[in-house]
Image (cartoon, rainbow, N blue to C red):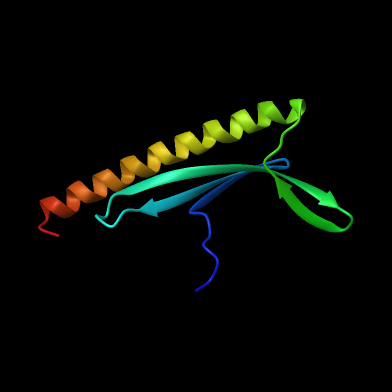
Length: 89
């Protein structure tokens, strides 16, 4: 089995908000978000969950965008669920 990938990513400059979809055994879906900062060490890209003062406005924007994406996705999934129930699916 391959490495699990985020459902969606938001990248702003060197800040990345990764949105992860999770499902319970009962089929309930929820989302989590991880936020990291990319940096280069020697010639290799790495990431960290540590942020400097000047990163914080970008982190805030990425989190806000992730929140909006999750709300829209949940709304879409709820509409699809209702449509499926209405059509006997």
